[in-house]
Image 1 (cartoon, rainbow, N blue to C red):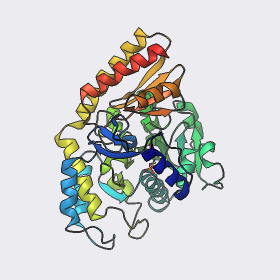
Image 2 (cartoon, rainbow, N blue to C red):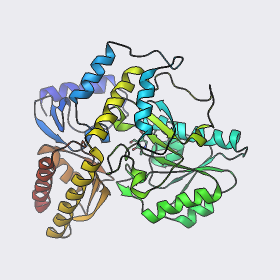
Image 3 (cartoon, rainbow, N blue to C red):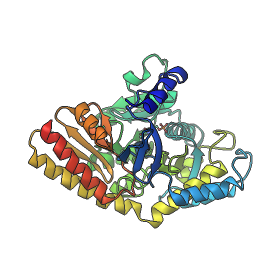
Length: 399
Ligand code: PLP
């Protein structure tokens, strides 16, 4: 390890809480789909800050929008009307069937907003004492206490109990189990169309349609977590649009402001009746500076047809990986995903393959010790993906 890297590493041990296990890399700079470490070594970034810099690092147009707004207005709080929030809301709402937006700062907070709105709508509008939120095994909804309760993974909540009550979990893909779990206390079902942290696991179309139909039949709320899969990543603007679903509300974050902390909940006009002035709030949510960056990000995603781009690049990548699976029998168990959200489940040697990729300049994530997770910028060049597949083949041949 270099001196420059060690300086950052030991500094961190002195100064930061031990809540992260880091990759052996200290990043100094980024542009597009490229990152450079503190020693100047270049990497192809197939992770995009975990699906965050959808337009690539330091996108020039977002930089310009930020610079312009930074000289006009940064933050005044939600005590004031702000045109920037409306500009962003208009752009976002035009992409879906939802009628109202609520802005916040992260994916966990966007899910908290969904959960709170669902409960309050049931109590105040439907006059039903329904509060329970049903989620699916393998999901991930965030690390705040409510989102952690929704996530329902013991390994993540160890030491943090008690978690808030009113959450129940069922196996993903099992409609009968979901039906059996619905009671008069059920307020909503919350799903990820493609489970991201769960290892890039797309839920089957007929199951998703079944979940939605069950929610309608039981008159409960259907929520989709679009934090990782949303904003063009899966080949449609929203992942739920791959299956013509109509969730009552969705949570959004990650690439909304291309790297700045911004989240949102989009809800139907009907569901949004569950909130009234004072019922939910956040100091920073929808601040002018971040709203301007997010509006520019969403505008570019639409103008440059990045959903279609993700669909085309993702389809080709999956084809290449399927061919690789054929050429190297026994090395790849499965290739999964939608658009540019791709998981390559290896049969063995996950950590070694991931490390070799990193040493040879390709950054991706290793999920569950076996699955290489790719979430590249939506603007990545085809040639970078081709190079990745070639390198993976060389590494797997030796593994
Ligand atoms: N929901 C999903 C599907 C996610 O993938 C994540 C983060 O990875 C979250 C929620 C939590 O988002 P945040 O870390 O911004 O709170």
